[in-house]
Every structure is written in structure tokens, then in C-alpha cells.
Amino acid sequence: QVQLVESGGGLVQAGGSLKLSCVASGRISNIGAMGWYRQAPGKQRELVARITSGSTNYADFVKGRFTISRDNAENRVYLQMNSLKPEDTAVYYCNVRMRTLTLYWGQGTQVTVSS
Image 1 (tube, rainbow, N blue to C red):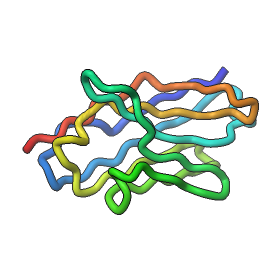
Image 2: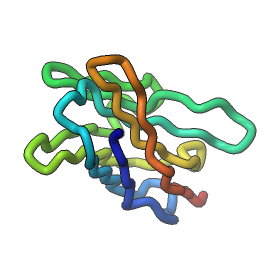
Image 3: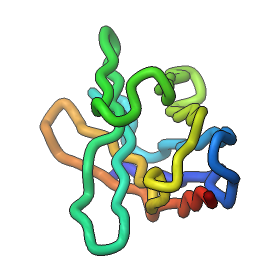
């Protein structure tokens, strides 16, 4: 089992920035990819960004604005979000994909961007 705890969400004005953090604990030695997803009201959960040991990938709607990073020593993954837009408002979820392809999710953190 892997436990994930997110932090860093909140309310920000359009154009502002937030940094999300997620710390993993438990059986973390088999973690492959770490990432962030989001889910807005009435919409499906969607990938925001993912990072592995060798690469990162981003959803088109955040390219150039969001940056994902990973600290393996601290078992943390971060999401720096700049130039936030009202349409970025959602619950953001930390996710890990184990090398066995098992997925784990955090409890989510609310990000609200006001216009």
C-alpha cells in the first residue's frame, strides 16, 4: 500500500500562482510514475502532468504554465502552477503508478481560481 497526501491548494486570482505538493509513504520502493490529475464539477478526471525517472508529459491545456517535478529523496512530487485561469478550478489529485501498474490516489486538494 502507498499513502499519498496532497497540500498547497487554495484560492487565487486569475494570473496568480500556486504550488501543489504530494508526499508518498508506505511501500514506495516500487513507484514508477508520479503525476497530477484534476476533476472539475460535472467533468471527468483528467491528466494534468506526469513524471517518470526519465521524462515528463503535460496535458496541452497546461503546457507552458505548469511544471511538474519530483524529489525522490523526499518521496515528493510537486506541481508549480503559473498563469492560472478560472478554468483551472478543480480538485487536484496526486497519483502514483507502481511498476506493477497498480494505481494509488491522494484525497485531493481544491484549487479555485477567481476571475
